[in-house]
Image (cartoon, rainbow, N blue to C red; front, side):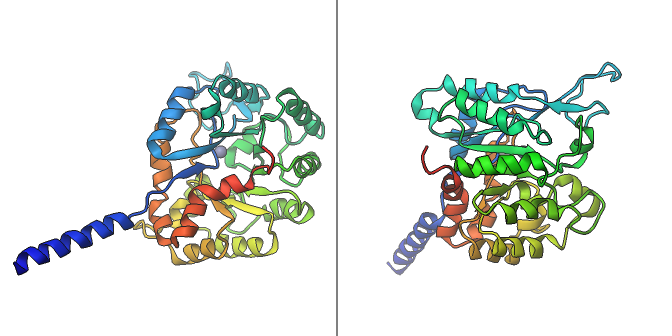
Length: 334
Ligand SMILES: [Zn+2]
């Protein structure tokens, strides 16, 4: 009898624990429908991956550059960093995104939040191109980006001038974004591959300061896998980010992959307390992204990789980070 009661109690405790296990629903704040060759696995594959991963909403953008297959290269490259050929600004990318969405039934379409990315961020005329695209697809675009500025070797491989987040062309785009109530997702590495200091910080900080009415989503919090390869952990990232969040309420942070490891999680996969505390202190300012490019098989793996970190946050904060914060940064009228 006692044994039976004990077994019952254990079963009850087990059920409670199972009930406590959190089931997150996600928004993916950083997704590319195409790759660096402007190719995509297609919408059915993307929807399947989203459904399987519990991703309810997704930002969707193209890739603003196309990698050239140069006649000097013996094989067709498989990635932008695969050989010495350059990449060039490629506006048709937005057409592919728009066409893919327009084919969807309304129910599926409303899960996607398209961002416009196919413009040259060093051309002061880019803002006019963006305005034409907004007019061409009324009500479609909900944000701008991912804008590629400082981006490891891609910066050097891209034809034309080095794009900076604080150049004059981008200034005009930030004004338009504020006017249209659109967030801007900017990839702007905090430093180069080898400098162990925030070499390029001013390039992202200046627009944050000068455009208080523009909502900025900082891709990967300025980190990258390539920087990590050369200098492992950037000790200055957390203090810098802490200061920026304090100083600029218009700053939002995309935590996608190069932030997850090694920053959110340590080498053992354990959440780092300092990062948990920072996210909990600014519960509305962080969001998750897969940063998949054109192929969607790893979407679930990318998003579920955040689970140990989310589990370390208070549940209400975790749900905001997993799903709600991205939706809150979109235009109010949409
Ligand atoms: Zn990206």
